[in-house]
Every structure is written in structure tokens, then in C-alpha cells.
Length: 347
Image (cartoon, rainbow, N blue to C red; front, side, top):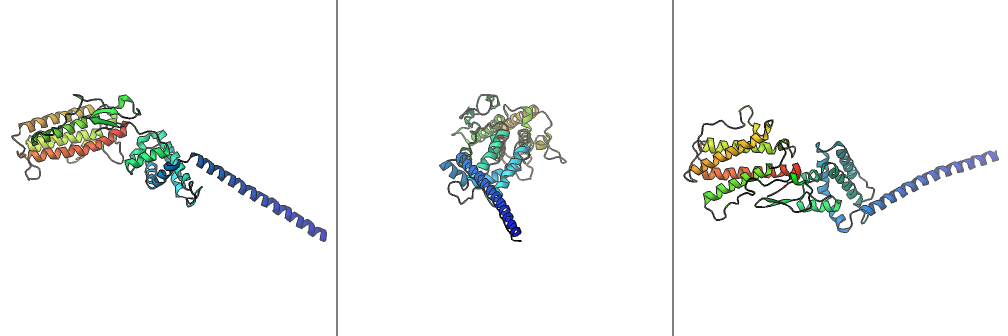
């Protein structure tokens, strides 16, 4: 009996020791793997000021990653990695607890950096910029901290002559060529009221021309900033219709049909884009030319429209200001659309 009890005690000790050794080995292995990952994070983390800047931007960066993950125009694999990054950031625990000095947020920063670099590699920097809701300074900080490539060249305008001011990231053939005359005519700074208003309207017309120059015809019809249904082609059609409606029909009283409009389809200027883009531009230029003739023939800015839509009279002065505002609004849209197409921007 005594021998049997001794054997059982020995077996229990041996068995318990094996399980204990296995548990200790597993814990030691996990600890070693964790220390290795922490060492890697320490090695690849943004240094000093960059890490502090990146941590400060985390709320804006989280919004950016969410918006990118929901963008169905991005490749599926990129969106899957973005959702995985969001999932990691949403976990109630971290690989490195946030309370740990220096490294507390390094894992979050590294996860976001890897995800954003994947977006840039597959979809370009413009995709990241399009979804950034923070300030321009914040985006510059993000690019530095995450090691993203430089932004596409900012094409600025001295009288809208285009000059890349950083290293070329957009092929030269994709940049807007100079249009007729090589530049827009600057509005006079000391002209009278009529000369100033007409010059500013022509300046905005030339701006729209520049935004469309050098773009492949099929890309003029792209809805480049989803979920918006705007395109450069649609804006050209819309402003051609506005020129005819206000100058020819409402102001001059001409008996001509409205462009791109029916009661059944009032928004076809923006939506019916199956036609030739070159023809749309030609129609718009012709309407602009006719508008200039009408303005030139008017006795003065106080001349009233012949057929005001609302029954309330309006003057040529009001009409010119109204069209300047209409062009300014849509040229802002055109600026974003053109940048999304090939990175080209300009004044």
C-alpha cells in the first residue's frame, strides 16, 4: 500500500511539473515575441517631434482612415487593410499600452502609417488628400510623420502661367497647357465699374477653359469627387446653359430654346454626359461670345432685362455680378475635379 501511494505521488509530481513547464514556456515565448515587436516598433517609430506630431493628429487620422475604408473607388485589398487597421485601433487593449512613456502610441502610429502607405502605393497620394478633413498644415505633418511621398507639384499662377514648384510627380503632358494668348487677362485695378465687371467675368471664363485644357475627353466626364455628381463636362454644359438663359433669354429677350433642360429632365446639363466633350466646349464658347456681344450693345449697367423670370426687374450690373458668382463657385468645383484627375492645380 505504501509503495502504491508513493508511486501515485511521484506521478502527480512529474505530471504537474510537465504542465507547469509548458505554461512557463508558452508565457516566455509570448513575452519574447512581445519584446521583439516592441523593439521593432521602437526602431521604426517616428522620432521625437514627429511622433508627438503624429499623436496629436490621431483624431483627424482616425477620421481619414474611416473615410478611406468606406471609399469604394479604392482597391478592395486596400480597404480590407484599412478596416483591419481600424479594428486594431478600436481594440480595448494595445500591443503597447498607451500609458507607456515614449512607446505608448507608437503601435497606433505604425499601424496607421503602414495602412496609409498601402493606400498611396495602390491609389496615389491624391486619394489620401481627398479624404483629409484637417488643415493643410496637419496634412503636411501627417506626410512627414508617416513618411508619405511629397505631394504632387503645386502648379501656381502668375497670371495663371503654370510652374511646378516641387519635384515633378505628374507627367509634364498632364499639366494644363497655356490656352489661347498664353495667359488670362488680368482685370484692371483702376478701371471703371463696367470694365471691371466684364473683365472679371472673362477672367473666370478663362479659368474654366484652363481647368479643362489638357484633359483626355473621357476624363472630363468623370465624377471625380464622390458622392458628388459633378464633372468638368457637366460644369461646362451648366455654364453654357447659364450664359444663354441669363444673357440671351432673360436680358436680351431672344426667342431661343433653353440649353440642356426639359421639364422632365431639368438636371441633364450635369447628368446627360454621353455627348461629345469637344462639342460641349464649342457650345459654351459660342454662348460666351454671344453674351459679350449683348453686354457690349447695352447702353449701361442700369439697363434692365427684357424678360425677368420672377417678374422683378434686374439690371445688367446685377446680372454681371450674378454670373461672376456662378463662375467662381463652379471654378472652385473645377479646381478640385482637375486635381483629382491628375494632380494639377492652379490659381
